[in-house]
Image (cartoon, rainbow over all chains, first blue to last red; front, side, top):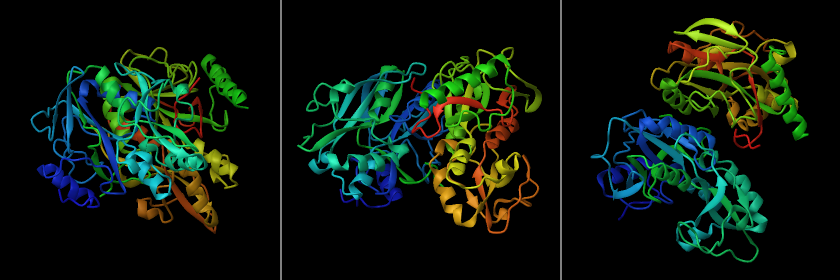
Length: 266
Length: 266
């Protein structure tokens, strides 16, 4: 795999489309908004958009396709959602039925793509400001935890929020808050800090998803709303068909991550 | 303070519900988000939400009801959209068929309410910062203009953007930009400034809606996306039934206008 991680978004998507690249997208095309994905039948799309509107911290909608149209022109040039994501997960009745590198054979005239902002965006901004991001230093996945924070329901979509945790040096917590608040399309400001039990988290060394990281002396665990939230909610709704990206294998858009809106202007 | 303000919004809505108040809501319940309204049949709601997502500057969605449910719990306590707006406009096939003080007799099981942020919010913030807002000084409606700026279409919804214009002293233009940018749920930063012809506006003294205001020497005309945009788009789509607020007669929510999200937490 010789692909430059700093190649531009269109070049990386081209290699993804041909199957030349099927890996994680963390750190690729710096400065471009990366997206979580939910592809679902149109009959459920209105309820899902209502759910996202009511839970904007875990579910920041950055793009919605036309029904049956695999293209996403508001997120970039020539984005075909059937081929331009490195890996997909296919769920039937809420059960993982397979992991694939394209969904050309699964596409249907009634599918709607919903793209959601992801935390890669504010992590880049934290690092630029000199704030350490432990799981990136350690080369592991961010630790994620189920919480007791209820989501606002819509139709069949309901549940509790999933959060990511990053240990931040106490003197930098306020700055980390302010920086991430600038990215409402990427989960925005933290939803809590400190005692995990206040969120119903029993043990920070036992994440529900991802990998554990150390919280060192002088560091505060800081919690951000997580894009796994809508994925869990979708699975729990047991839709007949639902397709998401595989964790870490995001859609790389042409939208600047610090743009005022997530709408691509050619 | 917060309790008092919350009480204010609830008290005003109570007077609106009984019909004791049917006037403009400009300046009422300071600090609370006020909303433009679009009430439409569910069969068009997915397309309309897609349209708003693609045009977030003129169409910032702050609330969406369940289909057939007149309550808006994410925008405040006990908000009944059938009665809690001072005046409504009813459109049939894109034609104004009447103006009413409640829509109890018009409510149907297939209606969806979409609430959109309005510019009252950032005007309050401009005034607090000492930036003059001419139409408020003059006691008239803000001047609004059709532009040649195309909107991103969705289903039957398409057209050009409508903007408001406020003359700002040249030295304050940047500050006005920064302040309004803090309110993405209320049209956010200006979309342009200066020469009206660049937007296809022929004559600033002849607004398409609202009232003309003077642009004095040393002032720059500054243009913001306007909530009349989605109203025009809805009318042009000639839906069999569509209900909006009457201009200036907004829904007053319980959400703080500077809240990170427009979701009310009791």
